[in-house]
Length: 446
Length: 145
Image (tube, rainbow over all chains, first blue to last red; front, side, top):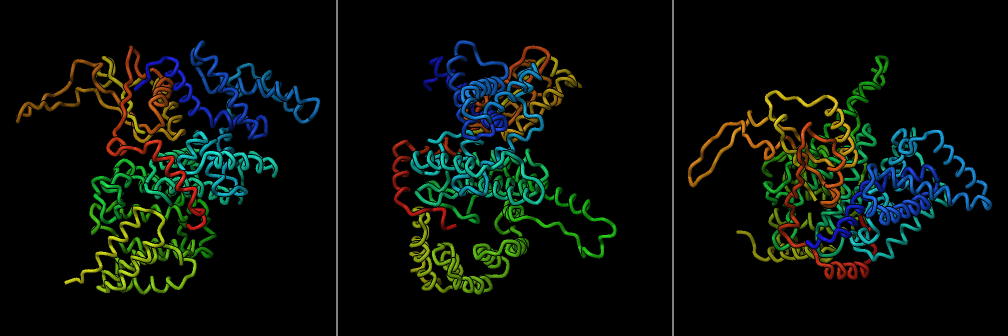
């Protein structure tokens, strides 16, 4: 490493501090200024000030408070300068000063009294008014502490595209006057699922690259997991948040086993389970327990004695992420593929399909059925699905169909389906795998 | 990347039945809470004094068991965390915020855990740029789920 230059070392230290503090600083400033874009600018200016001063003064005891205080002073200056033009800014400047005077201890005025600022920042970054892509970019930037260049690299997208996406997202939030708040009541569930969607999108972008040659971009999975873990502590009472964390932990536990030595994907049942990360599996199972406990507690507290007639059997409803996590857990708990509880997986998929009907889930259910009840039962389901036009371009349908046909000894048909699947996938590695399987259909079974 | 953050022992922490000072315990609790809230902690545990442990020494085909306690306190481990952070510097920053884990002078060691990338080379800048260019030619990916 060339890490000996003291200036460079210092620079990296400040960068690390910044990564830790950034989200909280921006969140606090957004609350004070009610302007996300301005908050980010001010935070950036504070960082520049730190880069100038800290090499001389050393890193302060509480660097986060220092950064917020510096940014806040700049906000007051800015508002004063603009005060003539805009009354609103004058008010804000006065409020900020008043705040500073009522509490002489600077740190405590900057502290977030209820601890909601970060959560507010989560909700505004993932506001449903923004496209999923914009939400992902904004979350990684504001919450994950990634630079625009890092986000661009992670999504294999040119940097100006990401920069523009972020600028536009912030503009939309300002123009639509999206409040910086934690949604309450019935809105909360919808807004949480908007956040979860973004986190899972980021995770999946890392886990199963939609295009390009590599199958996994592990750092993006780590970023998504970290966001999920943070959210789980911010909203500990939301079972679906723990459900998503569980799902990601368990999926991430297979990272090492999913890719062969020459970069080819290895299917779940062919993976060397000794390479699964037991720590992540344990964390995933613990997150499932957390989610389940919340559901059980809610169902007992909601049930009043007079209620019994109306509720035949008060089983708490598991959300889609928790169900998917439970499915992943069935695999994680099985020490060998043969030990997999396929009947349970089929029933979990049935519950999931009931909750969020989708041909993709039906297809997965068919795969589980083939394991539980044999390929013919599954093929009937898959062939029914083949008439669904929404799956026309979905490579996994012919891929699954081919596999079932192959197992039934119908190799000629299997080959056609493998080739169709290969022509539909955009992942180079996967295409190679599918073509190899198509070629293996040449030789009839003995 | 993952780091194992190792809290070294001191003569006091090695004492039989030694329990940490309640004030320190509370401070550590706060620090741990902060780490968990930041999504950094993967695992953590504290260890009993070495008097409750043993060593197995390897010499050729021989294995000799030596019971604890062991004398060189500062070479012993009193507890550890497993953290997931972005860089060694981030791990260092977090450790600096840790309350002093013992009464007497002590040390916390930060060690990087082997990851998949350590065995398979990560992409070069050139390869990444090539992918970016290739990706830009493709139709919008998010449309088909």
